[in-house]
Image 1 (cartoon, one colour):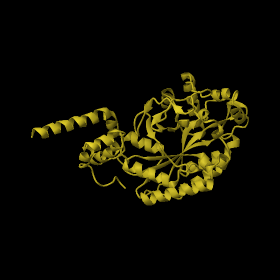
Image 2 (image 1 turned 90 degrees about the vertical axis):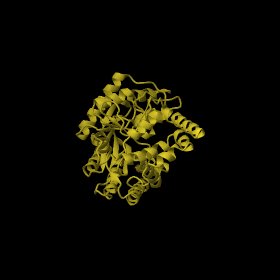
Image 3 (image 1 turned 180 degrees about the horizontal axis):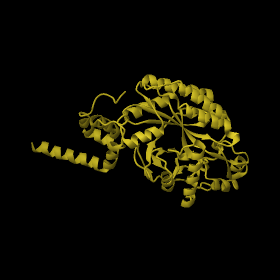
Image 4 (image 1 turned 30 degrees about the vertical axis):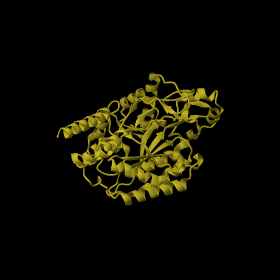
Length: 396
């Protein structure tokens, strides 16, 4: 009897030794909303001011999306993160906005997709770079100077310079002046509002590099939803890679002001080999964990000028939705703005309230925590807790 008591005490101490170092993550995973249905959103970046080929691509994407419907009759929504301007030739700081006559076909195609309810615009940035940094880089980098002579595809710029909210004219990058950041955010929000006729609700930081100052300025301007990779990169390191992580986040967590975070960390990039099957595997993982599946893609998949194969990418997009609807009959389509609002409101139509189901999903989430899951299985904690979980999947 004494031996059993000692073993029990030892087991309790082992459990405490595992739980205490991970308590914040365990609590955060419990607080993270559990979605009631499989949710699929394809998030597409970099559209807007640029090559006219985008007009035909947006029209073809609109037609593709409109062919599919979920159980409520809703077509898939592709979010379109917009770049609002390109610089004039040889002038990094003077811009041509998306509503200028030269971009009229693009703007018309975009508005048509919005009117049909399958394209959802989001703010990406006034430009996909910090103009003063680009101007300085052009003085010493022939590639940048050549691009400025005939600016078109921002994808042709060096990757570090595509970060808008850090000065990557030299590496490692340097922080931007706070006052300049706030002025730039105010300018791009005002431009978006004038162009689209409504203020932006969702923002996607270019290259996922931004700072607390930028985020606070977005919140002050009324942005409600911030799409993230689950981490905030604040700079570029000496090799040009995103660096300076100062915060991590989960779906539905509050950011600055009244904004909340969404996490986008899966991909549908046919140009890079991310096939519909890759995306469906991501949807399966996210559904199993009660999370929305946000798939990152970029316009270059749909533009020959950017090295993409439009026909192949459109066929892949069509196959993705056909397979998703077949494999997940209860899958739901919505925009990031709508998802953000549902999380903000804790809407029971979208967010699971049943504590038993939430506990089941929580166990699946914590089992994947680095170090915790393996240790908890080893001492029998997870097998014990799983006795109280529901054996069925959450809304398959």
